[in-house]
Image (cartoon, rainbow, N blue to C red; front, side, top):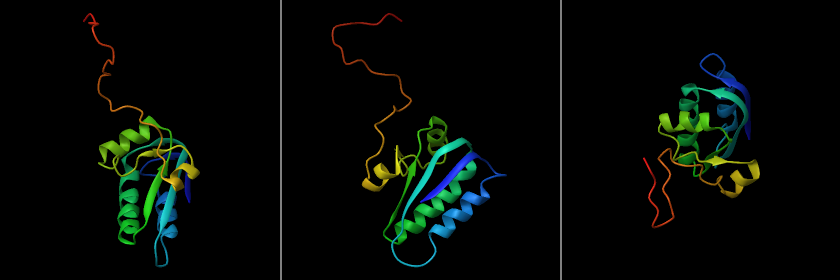
Length: 121
């Protein structure tokens, strides 16, 4: 497991990069949980290291799962084309089990499940 906290940007992402690389040393399958619950800000600088970890772990028949509850991290992952690879997990236990957090929405307007009612514009 790799944990990060505080702000992750171009000037502060190096420890995360090194931790992700260190967690993948050796040979064999790697199952890596990245805990970002204590990250207060993240920008696109997390995309490359997460993509590299994903590629390496998948090539070794393992996986990477990200624990977080931040819309901001979802937006960064979406912008980097990684949201489908990294759905949010609410805890390390959920990540290990492969049970992602319930969908938080798609960013589209909500659809009504009621019938027969019209909404005023």
